[in-house]
Amino acid sequence: MNVPLLDLKAQYATIANEVEPELLRIARTQMCILGADVESLEKNLADYLKVKHAIAVSSGSDAILMALMVLGIGPGDEVILPTFSFFATAGCVARLFAKPVFVDSEPNSFNINPDLIEAKITNKTKAIMPVHLFGQSADMDSITKIAQKYNIPVIEDAAQALGTQYKDGRFVGGIGEIGCYSFYPSKNLGAFGDGGLIATNDDELATKLKQMRNHGMNPKYYHKFIGGNFRLDAIQAVVLNIKLKYLDSWHKGRQKNANLYREFFEKYNLLDKVIVPQEIYQNSGQPNHHIYNQFTIQVSQRNELRDFLSKNSIGCDIYYPVPFHRQECFNYLNCRDDDYPIANKLADTVLSLPVYPELSSEQIEFVVQTIKEFYDKN
Ligand SMILES: *Cc1c(COP(=O)(O)O)cnc(C)c1O
Image (cartoon, rainbow, N blue to C red; front, side):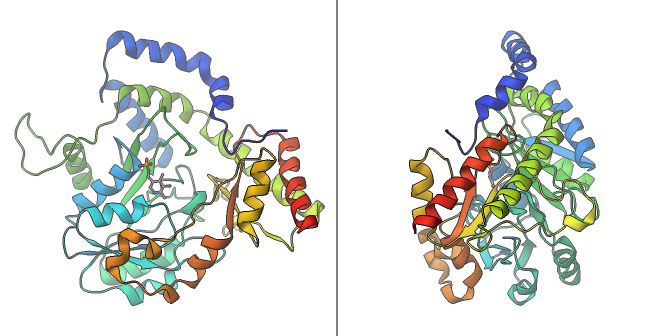
């Protein structure tokens, strides 16, 4: 049996009939960038996420960059963020010549530990940027409380969490001042290329972000401030408009697969070897409290297990092997490695398994059986 980490062709097969005429329509009309299809995507996503404004942009990384830019963050400013995340979270801060300030993770949720945030706040702190890692919300109550106490805006990196609902039912990305999402093909709502989204309930920020997306231009060829080319293509918008209709059913498929993993790990007596991802808000009654962009276990002998799975045609990957405080490009920050014991441990133990919605129960059982085989031998 062959179990890839992600099978985008399997998903495409279910929507090809709908998508292909739309792609042809764009080809024939040559309405290539922004335009009516992007506007309808923005309206559909604002409705879905229950936010006032949704602004489609060129990527999740650009969404984060624009959020920082629109808040005027630049040289000398500090932004607090988790050390355990995808690189863009920290990279966007640094490329504006601001200083990313890293915080260790919670062991159970993989998310930023809110108890460690306040100690990192200085008079230069200009934003707190939690990440809803792997599709589960960060502790927004605690983070919002600290942010309000110091009057600091919250930028949510919801790149992996479009559709995740916090315990009170609000969609993540719509809780802080600005939310950033990615349509990278491996995200739950993935385009046919790069794309991203910014959500905000603030009219003024929304107006400025729309201008920023087009070099800060308003009216044509007049620029009051400097933006960039952060526009989304129409082709991505038509694909995303179709996929959005199926997003909740795909979330359900991922959740079902996560539950199957739990059952099989129990059936094969592996729960002393494998720490399964904890659902922090499972008692909240929110169906999408975790949308499983990744199903990430923690194990010992992780690298050996990864190699063993690969040899058995099972896709898996390490998200993420190197936390920010250990990245060479951040040596200049002189971080103390001992300050990040949880992230350091996660970097050595995490392994993400296939969880995409089209997986069969047999495939999931095969993954668990193969893990069993590995630990029986080792
Ligand atoms: C994917 C991702 C991004 C960046 O999104 P792109 O669309 O690839 O630029 C940012 N942060 C996190 C946590 C991500 O997973």
